[in-house]
Image 1 (cartoon, rainbow, N blue to C red):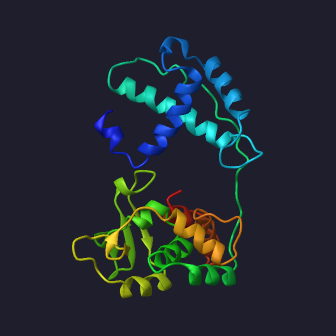
Image 2: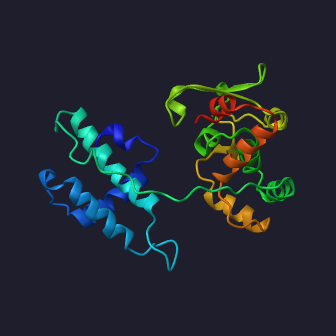
Length: 246
């Protein structure tokens, strides 16, 4: 119930992770009983449970790691507020994840996807494909963060995953799109739908992929496309890291 926690964009997702922790550890569990060994048992139990999203498959190591990390964060926040001295599960190791994806669109696939996008989604997909920014960095972009004169997107520390400010060169294709976009009347958000800002694009993106007949592709895969494009353009490893925020 801490205001700083409820203000997080990931609050609903964190609640979902915590629901499984409470279910298997027990809502009445005492902190002294939550040990590294207890959490290793939790990991094994969760891995054996069926996935609610993928019929016939079990919960992935990635999902379990997120849940355990959520509990580690809870304990660290308790330490910050003087409720604990040590994190009892700090030494619990992450499960190995074999979830590296290498899905990259061909230029023809990208054009097909772009043509299948609704008007509000098209410029977002374009920016993700050419510039490698993360979804929230793009969807919640504001005009003060756009420097068309010098050709950069300038994200402050609070708007990046790493909490470090970042300057991203604007790709020529994206620049042309940004210059055509209308400004909102009562908002400084760049991307609007029916004149209003929005935060969710999951369903519209899935619909666009289906229309374009592109399978096994997620919005995050556009980031892989961008990194591939940056390599082809002759950028070195350190330039790509700086632009993508790795």
